[in-house]
Image: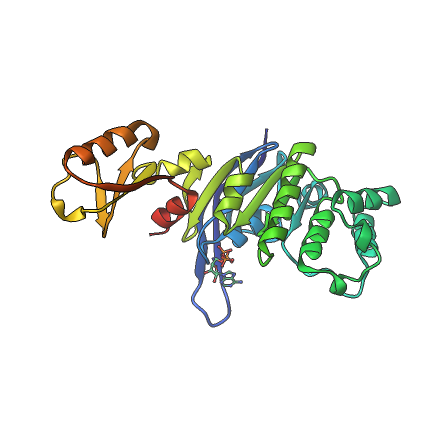
Length: 302
Ligand SMILES: Nc1ncnc2c1ncn2[C@@H]1O[C@H](COP(=O)(O)OP(=O)(O)OP(=O)(O)O)[C@@H](O)[C@H]1O
């Protein structure tokens, strides 16, 4: 059984005095149990709309959503008991960390105070248990948001931009926390992010959304095949002007740098360097770069 699946989801926003706007155009996807699935895409692509529909916050104009085998549009109450979402929402400002977690635990019918104590420990919030939400740093607010999202021991958790607006070191800590959760709990995670490194580090599979449609889906290695060649070999030469390069692979000349596009830099590096030397180029330096998810993003967003 898939943890999450949807078929042919359409979302048309209709606002008073405005033209209807179609934010999602027939999205279908399947996410297996225990998978970490990342939704990537440029601003306005429809990521938040999609995650809101999958997490039962929004009702789509058309289409079917199944969560843990249940019809999310009809069995919403049962679904909500077994899922949770962290969307960077502000929590009650005046309440203390412990009270906030206790409040949300009680909302799920969990009266055992040990559950809250365990959450404080797991998300490194014990030191801050008596601070009010408005007294917390951005990083600790996000940790509290995560602690809240796992308080009901959910089977599926939606994380909408879990590291947005965090300093790089705090963002890394939050990512490590999410990785730890992935290792320790039997949970399916669906996250949106703008951060390619984050998607690569956390996700088993990535869906790339553009203008309300999934334009590519797969592991990060599979997505990298969308870019014309996997690796770049960058050779800096003293004398770029000397003439023709007779190697039968694509390249670009950028000042004194010759950039080759290659299926495997490791296999083709020696041949390229010898070929250039034979042609009389004086080589200053050679470096290789693997294609990144960022290259894929730029290619697909075009
Ligand atoms: N309530 C609404 N009414 C009308 N249009 C909306 C509404 N909510 C979102 N939209 C539009 O739908 C499109 C998708 O928005 P959404 O927030 O899902 O994108 P996103 O990929 O999450 O963007 P971002 O990365 O900027 O957060 C955007 O063009 C947005 O302006």
